[in-house]
Length: 428
Image 1 (tube, rainbow, N blue to C red):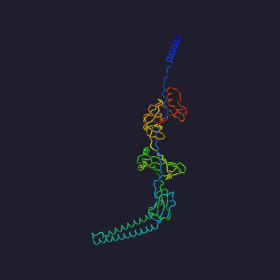
Image 2 (cartoon, one colour):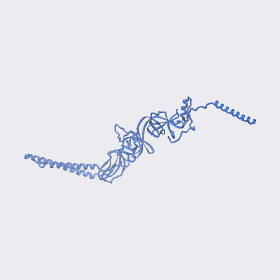
Image 3 (spheres, one colour):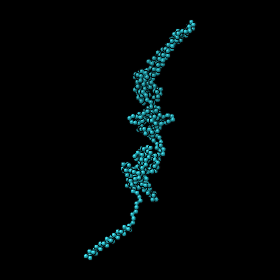
Image 4 (cartoon, one colour):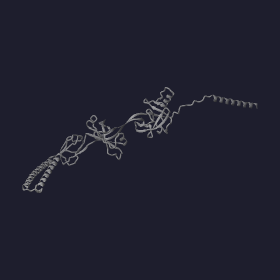
């Protein structure tokens, strides 16, 4: 019995000593340090916001066409007696040059007949004038003061005068027909096509070929309504001495080389295209075969050219990568001091693959625009801001900000081969 009591006492003593030891350890152990750093948050890439002027440039394409092109056709009928050696496909022609001449014999005879008619009418008029003078003198000698116009031969004189005018008109018509036997070029230009030869009979209005002027060529460039605004042009624009159109650089491949020509916009088309909802602006190039050519390469009709049109300029805008703009007009800005995401609404002026130009009182030059997609984004969420430098290394702006707060001398740049990866998601 005493043995059992001693065992129980021993157990009680051991339990008591264990309790005392546990209490002593709990009382003497140091307090755990409280972490002051925030959770690093989602890793995202960012780029600095800059400030630039926005120069609009609109690109379009179109086919070159001559400003003036006509069908060569005679105004009278006749057999073709002469065709100019320049009146061939691709030939150069000069203003006033005879391209085609019809046989003139019939029309020369008509001129002779008309000249004879004029001479007869003049002789008749002279006779009537003499007879009218005689009649007038007879009436005076007879003392007749109330004679009729017929007695004074006034109607006969008027008829003779009218007959002379008619004969002169017939002569003028015959001379005009004779002059029209020569079909002349109305301007300096080139021959697009020719379909006539000596001996062929030509009817009035029959096509003998096509020619176009080489002084000016033009290109119709279809653009959108917003691009029209970028060019600063009204819907009904026409160039004048006081208002000049935007400059245009035309580009096309000619003979295996890229050629460029300098032109300008001179007007807009009269209406919006009902099918495409685009509007054509008309750009012109002067003297495409001479001073306007590119080292002798003309911007010939039929070429399909690209065009870069110089637009308006908007100064002093903020610029960020386009991927930093979310939901149309919101921008994601990373705050490295707090390690948080800030979302601001901006006035977006223009966006393209080159970036987004905007105005904002909340965003400044040097702010870090977040370009990585973020799922479930919200203002104030924790993020780690990374920036890829030109040398390929990655700068952790959160570490740099923390180092500056602690007064430590550290670069805050992680090696590009580190395992820091930006977040992925649906773009917020």
